[in-house]
Length: 244
Length: 244
Image (cartoon, rainbow over all chains, first blue to last red; front, side, top):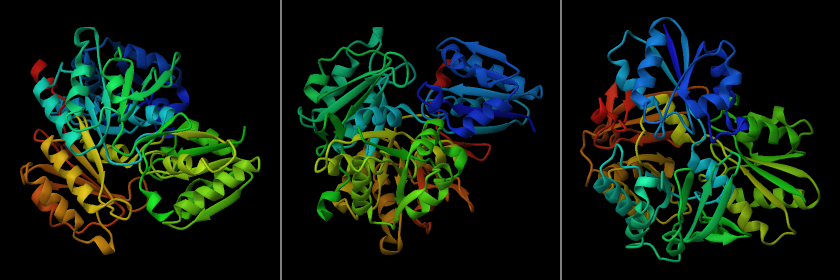
């Protein structure tokens, strides 16, 4: 059967790939993905038939990958982070219904919640939620409902796509919704360009985060009521204190 | 400065490690962790001073790792999945306050939400929450609050530690709480022994999941209102339908 690997390549640096992801890239005939991600891993694809497309061209990219697979090629479709988390695995399954049978093999990768968490310390040692603020594909009222659910449950909350030029005030709105339930002094952090050149991070409170000007290269972490700063790192305790 | 790598080794199979995690293991003098995880990676640690302890001995294990680092060794503390997600990174930071300065370097890994998601298909293509049902360190009423928040936000929800011998009915209780807001026909799935011998999975509805007898080696996935089955896989759409 023809095969498409949908591969999460992790945060960006080559060492962030899993061994399984690297092996799948090496095995593939065709490398497919958003231009920036293709450039990060193309050295691993020896035959180097490359299909790269710009941002927002996800549907075209997945059709191209499925056509290559139907023609008998082993295809590597690369995504940043994980193959599933806001990645291409879902869309490949959906579109595959219109094609001859193709084996789809998602290869998991380190999503920004984990790679960014490691930069900040240990913000996700307890229950957490991941929410994207992008309303390109999701109505804003559903995003608000999710933020309210995260606030109500006092989840550690990771925000993907916190802002873009068109959505300059979305993070501010999100912080206001979270502050309906969470303290303005909740410990938060963000990381810009995780695992890439120019990586930087900052730890701050929720009310300070509200005023911060971030961009689409940032991942944001909002703590729960127990999250604290230890040695300049953001740490959410699991609850071992009770045993100490 | 002395150094402790806190390393997420992924789901279990060796190919699930990141290249960064493998490199950190090779560099380390001392390997420290729960016996099962230590056995999975010990071939990578050439010098093989091994400190392995049983389950629930997390505090002792972290003290041992910190002592080794203070004595001048490079230590690898291994966790399954990610170093942060219910992992040892948080506890190492907390306990490090009582020791001489030690450099703590979390190395992210593929947590079960991602590796299990890849087995089931693409269940986490939209906003999601991760909740542990273990009440060893967390009061059950907080777990209920989190489940209600996840239900209210219609999050795709990943459940870690869904059951143990002492907590046989916790998954049933969790399903009942989620069904206050989610349909009993919500598409769900679970994976047992992700990435290890005996891996198996099942896709079913939320009301069927409620009756399932699971164990601590299972990770459970509950879809959102749009999650569906495509070619026997669990797929949560991102919302590209609007563009098609």
